[in-house]
Image 1 (cartoon, rainbow, N blue to C red):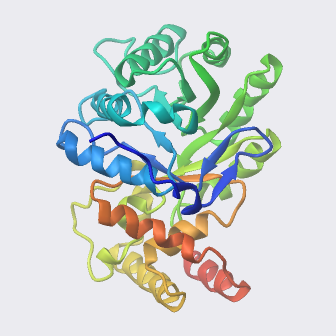
Image 2: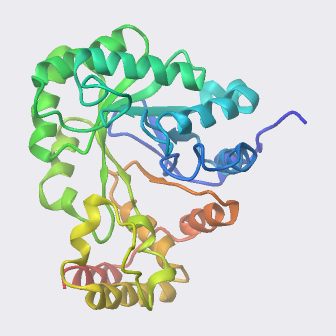
Length: 330
């Protein structure tokens, strides 16, 4: 059966402009980091991806090393794109990244010109695309001159392989440094994709949000639920082998008991708002216009739709914000 997208898809989710650029993103983007590569049957992945599009998610985020086997998440998306989403290419914002280990040898990681060029070519081939909408340098490269990375990214735009350029996992200082070069080159720098959630507020504390705003760019937040901690699944206990992302490991520094108490206090506020903790966590991030989109992943349709219900209540009272702030600062 030929796929036809839901005609009401743009009525189901807010969408937002990235700073004062011409790029518009859905408040929630769909990430293929986990569970949709070679460990998941294609048919399941297809159902979840198409359900996301039917519900207003038109931005899909990938990376050359996503899988779990390198490249397989892009291959999965590519198969769905070719079979079902290709007629909607002009509606889609498709993004990918390069910089973490992607193939054997010393040129298979970081942000040299050869590495970035080869990585994007591979990504386009896997996904069956002529261009991506945003291409990100996935991490800071301590060994390559920043000018080389910036010039390589700028060239990829000039070659028509990417419309916009972003960085990922850059600190405020690092973002400021490369944005200065982009401004000189006229590179369409659109944002920084970083770990940001209610429990991990590094982006606020190191000034990253201000740097991005000054440079007409946005913060695209990954890990908005802290790998699932900001859900109602861990209100009683957190397994000792919990697979926390490296950017959130510090959350356990005060012990599991303190973290669980914080989650329960936040959950109390969420319930009073008529929301699940996960829904409130997404809404809380999006209260800041400097965050145009947050990236969620899902391997099951019910989990996807449950998270998207955050849009039923995106407003916070002053009292709620104060109470949340007090909990987060404990």
